[in-house]
Length: 153
Image (cartoon, rainbow, N blue to C red):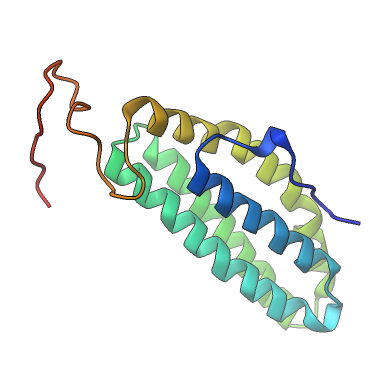
């Protein structure tokens, strides 16, 4: 039985974000189903995915001009720090710490996705930021004219 099932409530309407979130949920379920002997390895794989996941969102926030970027990135940093601390405990022979983390992650993820990630997905959609190109469309500068602005690289 899955620890967290993917559901329509987790869909945010931003395809690349939803795809990454689906991977997160699948890896969380794999982590939950792993044995204590495999827990450190599976947690390392989960953390590696989560680093890439958070870096993707952090990049979108910074490039799009997402106003609460500091708050959202701060939560990413805190969660990764906690995961790394728990990994150290698991490697030191405390698999119960890993099991507690795994049990708490579904509620954290559902809340984070519904609040912080939902706000980011809405902002990206509303501003027309192109997550693939990493820039807003020409008309999204806010000046009311349909033209391209050049940004310092």
